[in-house]
Length: 305
View: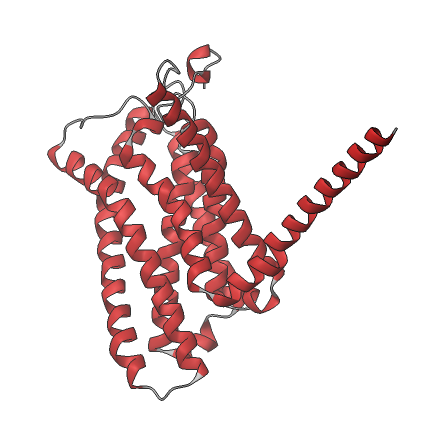
């Protein structure tokens, strides 16, 4: 990064009402990402029953990567930043990696739910909580090893590797995610429907429905940038690029997904929602009320004196 004042300027010059709104939107988006994902993370960590389930570990992984995305967006989205290999305001491929980690977490969560329902006995034997944590740890380490490699090779080599890697990786992972979505939908619609009513069946169905909805919203917000990258790599030319990260709608959409995902988690899981309302937000509201009460008492005392 450079020490010049260029990278410290806002995402757009604050010379018009529209530019000010864009600047405030970027700040609000970053703040919303952090607040919602921190809230969901705390809810999972505070509830032992949630922590014991593998699917909530993937939720926690998604939230942690999205928290990092939200924090980094104060730089990449609020300020005038172009995050390319040869840009003086680049983030050395770290910021895109946080988004990629969310992608890997949701893909892993889809595969986890698929195997848990198709082969429940084998799944319970193989995928213990420790092994699930090992899977999560592995793709986090892998992601940052890739970051290290990109920063150790030359810019030209990094561009060539990224061009080919993203082209192939995006196609295959999108096909896998869509395929898992279709398969999970069939399972939720037909296979689980034939099982006798029980608490276990309802739990399976709700977990499948939740990951289906999360994956659909994920694809809806990520497919535009995936398609853009695939088309640009396929035709072998430089596509149109926006002034910076904060004004590029293709790069804003994945950040919007980082707000939608925790909302879907809260909406789709009653146990998570109950913990959030009773142990996280309620506690914060009580503290806020206590502070306001103490301030009012101080004001009264000063008035009386």
